[in-house]
Image (tube, rainbow, N blue to C red):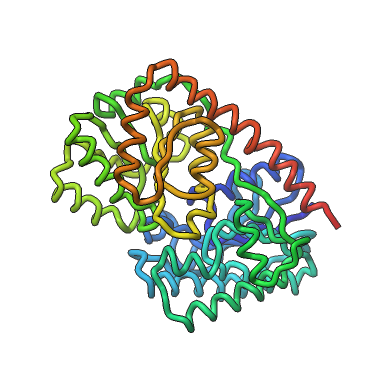
Length: 402
């Protein structure tokens, strides 16, 4: 098949769609990607890119067609809307300059929903069906993650979402819990297919990497990796840390990543005198994550308390499971269910610092054998539910369905 993948984010930005495209290409399919100039997460164009450069590239045999967009800047609300709509507009124009025809159009939507607009233009031009992979529910994501409550804005995006879903042949959902929400938006049940995230093949079980261990503080280490945004509720980790500190349970919280809330969190670390507990190491290439994970006692996943986040499976959970590491969660719903079902760790309700502190203390007091067993359980569950090769074959079957 010749497949056009429409995604606002792509290599050198680090999103799961990169690996999925590689998987499709390795299975013999001709993969093209319509995307923007890379600027996530720092909000500035990557070195070597600017507004008008690199309209066409090739990466590992995948042809990339880049559109103009306005960089996301500091991630503020108005600037983000400019970022979203500039990609939707210019990518729609870019479609007109892509030569050839396509059998399928596959859309990756981790937000914004506006990525569906150029996909519809591509559908009309190439007479090819759209397969829309929902990572975030809209307009609920706008309300939960962006704090936008204006009824007109939410109504507009709800209408746009319904329009995009109507033009899609199938709606793929990364969490089974998404189904009821999308059904309420008028989508036929037959169009909704469960297709979860996997993770890149380099996420695997490895022995503790001494080269990385020497860069980390000594002691009991909990590690968070990913975006430092409002949705991740890092403040809950700070509050739990204070509780554990008062109990004289010494925990080193290691944060890998960047995000628009990082400076705010750093200020709160100082105010709460937690500089000896929290270590912000910045962002590293994703291929280094398994080496960092191998040095941690457990890995942390956290989200705000909100209905939409309870419906979501945070993509880092698959990475954590694949690396065979115990997991401690501060979240509701699907993510908490997976931690419990996999027997890979403990979880507390979202934004419940007392519950999180208790979960950390319970894990802290386990024997080395029980901690090791949790890590093994994590990898076993990953292979059963989220294996990369199995899921790529499943997607090919879905795309081949007429």
